[in-house]
Amino acid sequence: MSVTPDIDPTRIPRHVAVIMDGNGRWAKARGLDRSLGHVEGVNTVRRITEAASELGVGYLTLYTFSTENWNRPKAEVDALMHLIVMAIERETPDLIKNGVRLQMIGDTSRLPKEALDRLNKCIADTAGGNGLTLILALSYSARWEILEACRRFARDVAEGRKTPESMATDADFEQYLATAGMPDPDLLIRTGGDHRISNYLLWQIAYSEIYVTDTFWPDFSREDFITAIANFQNRERRFGLTSEQIK
Image (cartoon, rainbow, N blue to C red; front, side):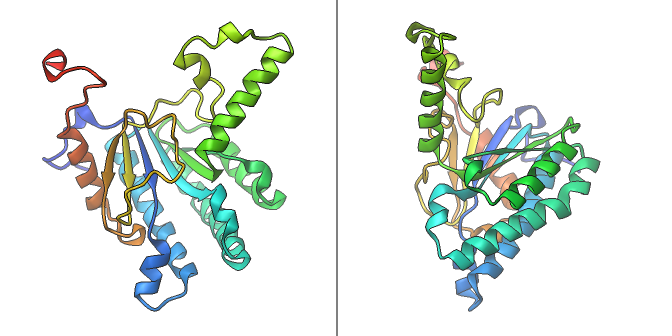
């Protein structure tokens, strides 16, 4: 792929996180069942993963299924679980061919055992990838993640592996997060027009640039993704400093 003139190939965000919103509304606007919106959304996952890989993005994290989504009608939840697993299995050969490594974060203890086993097989099959890392936030909640990190640290203290004073820096805490070892997202994209974070990567996006588009996820194109990257590159990231200090 030739990078468009609007994109500086030396300033590609290392990590892009996406809130894939609008599948249901896309279907409703067309008089279709919500499940068909999710099916079409899978096609968008494929093209955005391909675009991210070609542009040289290192990590792409997709908000695939939140812990709150378990409260949706059972029929929709069951259909989503089936669709997610089938789609990942179908795409695994191409992920391997393109060097994409699959990972998963979230409270996977809530997933049906068969679905979890099949997803873990896909993760194992792609483990040798040395290109893009594709992370599925599945049964994920940022509040759950932070609480779980606190529990893990508390267990380490209780069992004598750590002391309370061991938690001295951000990095000390981050090793207990589900994203340990990954860089924080440089860019957070939300489709569907809503201006909220929806319990997603609350610790990690402290200094992420946020890009919101009204476009529903099924309609989000490669060109839309490139536009988001270009928008990111036009921003000044100060991390609490002044413009003069950055320059």
